[in-house]
Length: 240
Image (tube, rainbow, N blue to C red):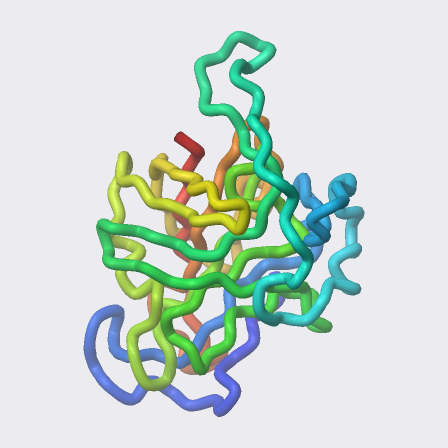
């Protein structure tokens, strides 16, 4: 796996505190190859496209605010799984606008994230510590499939939106407010930490047959040599 981008300034941690201090901004290592495993759709509200082909993310739009395209009118989702399984019905596509995690006091707006020239998912801007990003060419939260949400654990100057993500427990519930006026609620299935040089892309990004979300941030020790954390923390969750 490629090494994630380092801090723009390349500075080392400057203060002590949780997780070994207020560390340098870290980018989540999300490769285009991994993203090709997503059952992704384009950000356009009026179109639905097949999963991304390997390497397709290179032409994704740059990071920015929520797409200006209007979301489709709310529709009634299917009420039953054709297999007879007991599960919450998926929602239609709609961009997320706000992430609410009551257990760790997160109340943050979304920005779109895309694949950059380094073939990794661009992280949310570092100048706003209360901001999360979603992979906008992938599944939107509430749709069938795997939706990817990333956020910083800290920056060069302060703790960031996912500073307490590791304090979530199995069974905790968080919410994604959507542009169509609906709120998608997710229950935490598990939290797992993976070394960045042994990241299980297929497991984390692989498509799902129900609406699921991955919350991803940096974890582990700060490696001064590469100016990044050694691990990623992943929260696995599903729609309820």
